[in-house]
Image (cartoon, rainbow, N blue to C red; front, top):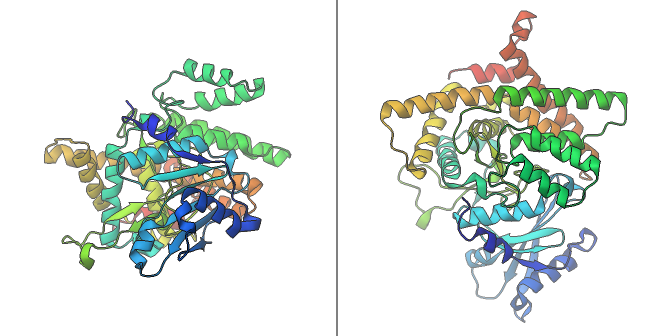
Length: 445
């Protein structure tokens, strides 16, 4: 069942028939802001834009209206985030689904209101707080806050509210009738049918259908490209067979996953009255949800607040994907959480999940659930490398951002192959040294 009123809330989002033009950044951005808030153009005020440049796909601007006698805090509370999509990212992102996800998150008080859509982006409220860095994620007062927030996400957000037109438990026949009604070519229908068929779950899109879509987007002009594409397709089918029916939490083992909880997407909220929390656990918010079901970036800034289209995924995937981000973009595997830290994280996570899901368990049953989740996270640890590796291969063909996506893809895919060699025993059989990432993952303390 969808959350009440979400369809109406989505339809009520204002649409502004204008575009952001990077060649005329301030002019086009100001036109959008003044269309949204004409009063910002009154005498005495000054609209300023702050550009955030630590992303690698899209443009993000913070718009503020500075006026005499208004405090910085009030200015921040009124600030607006303008996100303009990078060229080509529509290949990987369902824009309508993104907006619906934002409405869902806002409905559950997990995101600020979406103010408006425009031709190539969104306008939404700014969230005050401090963006984390990779070392912050290993601080106990932060990771416990992340665990609590993620448990809340997975516990309260209904998977079936993500895209009422495509999800909501529709059968494969229902989906294919919808696709056919849109009038695509026969080839398009075959691809869409394959995307739908890859997953054993009725909830779609999901993490497996997203990866399938990305593999179809890979180039196949040369023999090497065709070979790699076929190999990755084979691995996806193998993964779905092995992990696609994992018990997990939520509907059919799927939760409303963030799927990109890197340090820049974790915001530590300001302390109330400047006083630290009594239990010394930070209150955090998550940002950057845009691609959740159709990812296309790795965009990180303290103000990149809401941008991904949330993907139904196994809780274990969402959690171990976050653990992978402890190493940052440099993939410093020495920073990954050890077994003992992961166990405590999962205990904090599960207690939050249990609370928000109103579960009543004995201590023994709770410990059993935590151990099962620990084992599932361990099993999924190689999948984030596969996921982001394929994503980066696609980005290498479409992105105009100055970032070495091809090299990043190789690093992430190597994590997957190392995991595969470890669980199958081929690394040990060949007498090879255990890779650093696997070694760190196996450490108890």
